[in-house]
Length: 566
Image 1 (cartoon, one colour):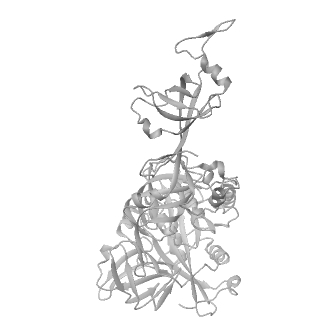
Image 2 (tube, helix red, strand yellow):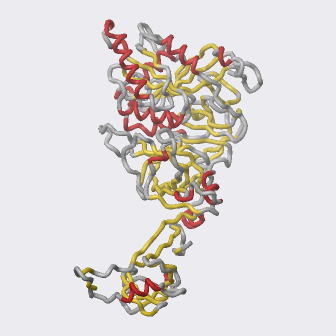
Image 3 (tube, one colour):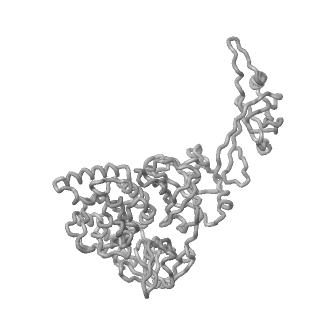
């Protein structure tokens, strides 16, 4: 297998669009989990889990110059591994997990029905996770032959219009009829398969593969083989591993030695990033690990929460509020998490100040101040707004998850009624900071200077003397006014003073004006007589009240609940 490059292609689309049939007619080798071999899948007639199969083609000419294996030899063949993802709405988290291991995507569309709800969700997942896509218009054989060309052209135009505002605006669209013949590999009477394979070869590229660094492997199935051991099948996400190396199952805190490995029924001594393989270990019960991550020992940790740079998915119609709980998918795991948004101070983004310039670098800095946001901003969308803004999201998981330190996060509302024609995917981003300590809310979050702007408004009841005024309605009777002593306030007359203490028992305060009240202020305030009115020559009008403004900010994670003024 050394002279064969593995290229992973995700096959996604709405339920019953023919994804599994397409994978079957293209493939020559199927894994133990391919083609709906799961008894429940057979019974229900739909794909319930990820399926893997492959076929090998000659190495594309346009890749021959740059295509080298780890020993510097030119690749001779291209192995295309098809990741058949379920299309049913209730299995969205399985789709997301499968899509994170692909190099390119095939979006399967029923030529008669066109774009459907899950087709659109799969398109969104593709935009987040990969840069290349091919659209397959499947089931063209169901269209009357004399109308077929017209129907295909009409659907192509509709698809191009749908894709116009996505990164896949100019992607190939191939009409196909994936008809199953008498055996698993027979494809009699199929239409367009040669065109599709030609297109797959033409769109293939040399994925970035790195055999260095820690080994990381995404497990999607686990089963036992009598007399051999337990096999974990999946895809290498990072690094490489060889027979005899030790690997860790972090979720179970167990270390095992690799006994043997296979890539689509061929034994291999080592596997590297991008390879699809089965890893065999001994003395391990496969029922303990359905799917998840395995790695080099001591590489992965459980995380209890994280911070990410967040992007809104434009097709999600709801408002994503602070404090809400969303389904967070990380790899093959989905967990509920509470949301908290924040970002660099909006008013400083165009300043030349150090704080603003640092904020634009998008790196979290505990020395900088960030502003609390009530909700996810529309302008964090990458493709919709040219002037998209920077926003961060703190996620507090309901239970710990095991993932990479920079893992991709997708937030969704999987509890939305699947019969509604609405997008359930809300936002996405990559982890910037992972919380690996259980007590992160008291040790890490207080280091973040995320603040809320606060303000209170009262009115001057009367002038006590030229340096002091009595203010009411700024605080409630039960407020601990001592916490606010010496804080700066501004009068609507322009005078600036400090809170000097309480006045009586009803929440009134004294405000001291260090420079003394201006003459105009004294004139205005001298007319203040509670519950009285002043007359002018024409009518009776209330005296315009003099307002008092107290402005400050509070760091939301400050354990001392201090109030700060600039």
